[in-house]
Image (cartoon, helix red, strand yellow):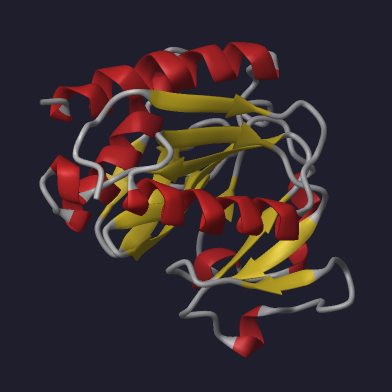
Length: 221
């Protein structure tokens, strides 16, 4: 099994990638990482509009099953939406070589998002019992309102991670109406555009790449 943390391959897809294609790639790469025949990989991409059901998904949370294709997946979590304007980061890392701490890996994913958001003057925060990264809203006339700006869901197979993060840059937020996102009905979702920011996807990619190094390369040995 591979023990080196370098090199790491970055993949970038400009056109939307079919969900089944992404799953097949992750499965193959995870097996190759475990075998030591391919490097770790982070893949930044978008999907066409679709819903995914994690291992904890509750059927009642799929409000409009005919709206978009629904994909069952082995990641943790409940229902979520993927679509254009949302940057997906699929993270395939050798966690055993990084200390074998899955909880720390999840926190590092959150930290990656939080630091990326800070580059765009957005304060992202964690919430106990609510996965993902949240922002406090002061612009919607509802004191104390909090919206989710990024989701995360992971799967670990033989100590190699699959899936990762979904950061809302400028998606159509009405597409979340077909589900109860992540099983949380009492809070909303937002995006950088909804917060009044207009970075390009390439600018978001540059921020994600820079902050990935600041979070994950600290584990290099």
